[in-house]
Image (cartoon, rainbow, N blue to C red):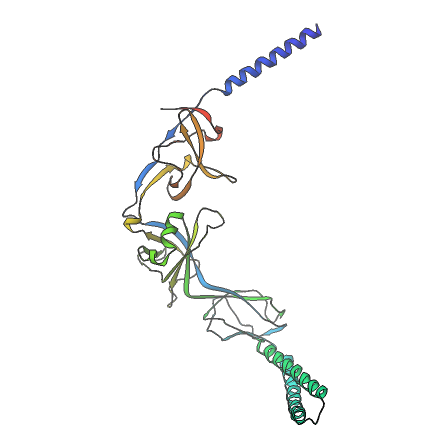
Length: 346
């Protein structure tokens, strides 16, 4: 009886496996769509941005010591080479005076020994010792002069204090961050653009064929034209877009860093093309694979890598990967695998 029970159990398991195999072979019903072709002639592409200072520098002293005349505030303006902050210079001044006296003494002694050496009235070893003493004294003096000069923290350009990183009268260390200094006479407008737009802007001659306008959200009626334009020569960390940097003159301080706005790019008509668009729901993404869609051919599906462009509402531009005749799956993508059998729902 026990043997018969094992045989019956084995028969039941085999029957269950056969039913499961048959179930996996059924067609999966999916909805599909063909890419929509849209003509881009006469329409500007728009990208959001945040303005940034043209220069942003963290300033520090090159020497140690307690800070003086600490009366600083974020937003305070300083002209180029003006003193922002100082370190107590008394010890450095004494060091400079000491080394200056020794430098003067060894200089005179070296000149006297050199004159005697040229007349063969003194040995070469005495001459070399006097020369070495002079060079050491000179080096020590120049080091002391530089250290005294380094007690002043000067503005590298016309700009403003952004952040202060120390407390009043703090004893600071060399290279310790003291404050962040920014330049606002010009602004950097940074945004990210897709590949096909980057191809039209990376070259200075091609830039002349494009119309580029900047509008700040605080004054949308104002149109600003950048003085310079730069495009990164490789994609950014997301591997999908290129960094566009526009330089905007700001001599009257009309704009500040961190202000938002819209940068519009009007490509020349001969450079525009009819682009393909799909609903966002058709796009799949895996970190190891990137962006892709499922394309139906016959009754089978296969994944096709795509390059994405601009997004508008629930639509996204397809730059490369599919044609307008392809049938792209819209539903149940997570159930699909390569060469899955599907049935197109009407």
